[in-house]
Amino acid sequence: MARLLHLSKAKVHREPGKDKIKRAQFDGFSDVVRMGVHGGIADYFKLKPEQPMPSTLDYVVAAIGGCMTGTVAGALEARGIAATPDKLEADVEGRIEEIDGKMLLTGVSIHYRLKIPKDKRAAVERALEHHEALCAVSESVRRGIAVDWKADIEEESTSDSTVEAAVSSASRQ
Image (cartoon, rainbow, N blue to C red; front, side, top):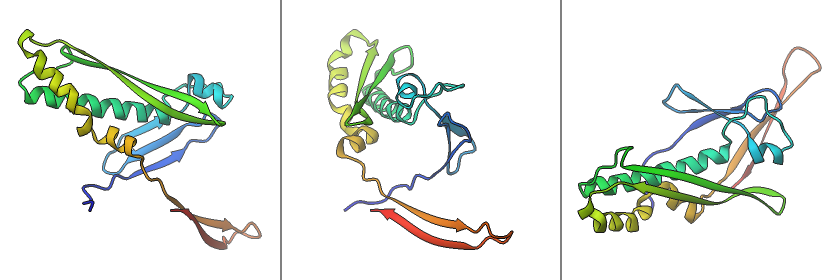
């Protein structure tokens, strides 16, 4: 049986305009993250954004890479091996493809570059062998994340200045 550890919450809004820019603010944090389109993703939507920026899929790729790198760093440090930026670096690449008319993230590759003491190779290989199973993001993606949604729909009356609302709900669960 699952035990709820945390409920992650964010408010997301689309900015006005045609560039597909969204703003996300995580509950408890004042910073706003902006997401948009660029490169092949902009081409897919037939857009030429005034301000190219990372897409929502880029953030998924970075989240996987961040979790995996943090997990391997923790495994190295537990073995007495430094995981500072000059000792551990990761290049993360996400493959975004069009399949059946839909844009999908189909794979993520991570290339670690490690500088280690000569006598620690076996310990590093053990850390690498087991780190992925400890990464919550990678494991969540591999297992398939259930997504459900609901919507409250309010119809505004345009007959006078008073807003009359008919509220209905839609959902997918």
